[in-house]
Image (cartoon, rainbow, N blue to C red; front, top):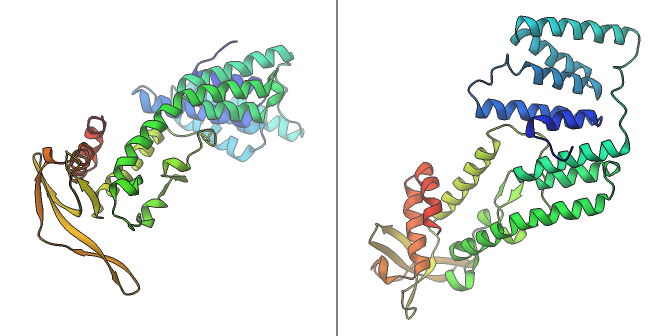
Length: 328
């Protein structure tokens, strides 16, 4: 078994006796089927819920296992109800005798290694490399050389993620990270953004270690899209902050410290400001009349910033739709 599909990872984990992970995998399969298919009804997903119930029962949470079993009995077909009756009778008989469910097939070490490698191979096309190496670390006995297996998976992950992180860092640098280039001397990046955390991940690229990543063993079908939407909204809100920034002309000969006032597709208006000492601290105050520039008069970074800002003002949907084009 050199590989397995998403829907058979649960079966593979179950064969290895990793029942808790297997039940997560079966749950994931059900959630993704619901998200991707109009035909994923509770009736035709009943076999998955039966697998979930058995795995939960086998790793010791019998109360929860009975809940899933009854779910199949309530929402499944007549045939599924008969299966539920048979399983319930069997469980009750075993419980009354004080014994657990029968052991599964005995596998050779070679068979275990082939099945485990198939699980790892299944995770990689989904870019779930962190889950693959977490699985190897959790069950090293399933691999002939677990350290080598982890290195291979992590090398493959770095090949995927490093170009993305490099691109993200390059993009963020012109928006808010390169203080010496884009913000006035002495300007302090707003603390609420520097410490912004979403889903326990700090949104600050230099703080991300590509190998310090975890993927939950089970998540609902729409969780990736929800996470993406949350991150985009955080970025959109940050763009709307009216903190002063340093603006440069296209020829690089002039620069202005100012707040964004308004813009359209051809021009932008700025309010010049200066930093003054006030009440033991510092504050920005107006420094002359507002200035309007044609976008073509400003640097490429400033033009990109203005277009992102305009898209952010249009709302979440338009911002998300236009972000990829605007960051090219």
